[in-house]
Image (tube, rainbow, N blue to C red; front, side, top):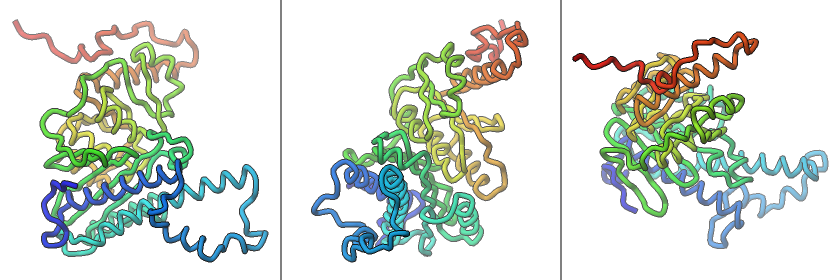
Length: 364
């Protein structure tokens, strides 16, 4: 496969872009393997994971004392899928770790890969510690629900946020869904599929003309659905907005999305979206349009210099952001009214919801 990044990790060390690209490719390949295993089982030519191979060799599960065996029936099936999701998370991290340990980077130090152990807060502390010591580090964090993706084959159920720090280089980010990987930093953006390889996202975003009837929303906003349908005919609710934004906004015609950030390690979609030509309104109200501003903002949030906030609006342009922000503020305010008669009578005109009131009239 064509590798459009400087260095090969052998004769010439890789920078942050090359390290992130290899991590994203390894994760995408592993996601594809996990999906095929769930649908059709292991291929005869496919190498078994070490942990499963160990179980096959010693048949340890057959000789466990009764009190240590998993419960049977429905509880046992649920436990099986929980265990499968946990193994998938570990396999994804190990695939990235194995791939990166085979190559060198511009720092001259081995890369620390975080993602298989501990909670998000502890991994964030470890990430900050690596930055403070000028050590290269890569975080692989799964958002959404891996079990739902494995069980229901729902490609919008989960995604991976990959964040890369290489000393002396800007922060690099990638979002990996079951079908696509998207990368971005201060200098360029790329899209990867296993079928087509790498595609440079230069100039205008390589996406369809926007369809203003659609908006992507977190599932937490579903109670506002009936009210929001007065403004958007098609609401796409998702537990993992990162995956849907990557597919529907960056890869489709949906013009705007609301993203609940969860944890900063789960928010690679923020700089990736800016790098692919989108505009982001962060929780504080600040607008971020340039990739280097997005990289700096995320870096400061990772190091604890600034709070990351809870809600970002990602859109094609400022107009779409203003419209979505005003509509959400209006409907949240109306929903908070204790009684219908408490609702304000001076409802803004439709033009104001579209953001036109912010533009001054041209001077004659």
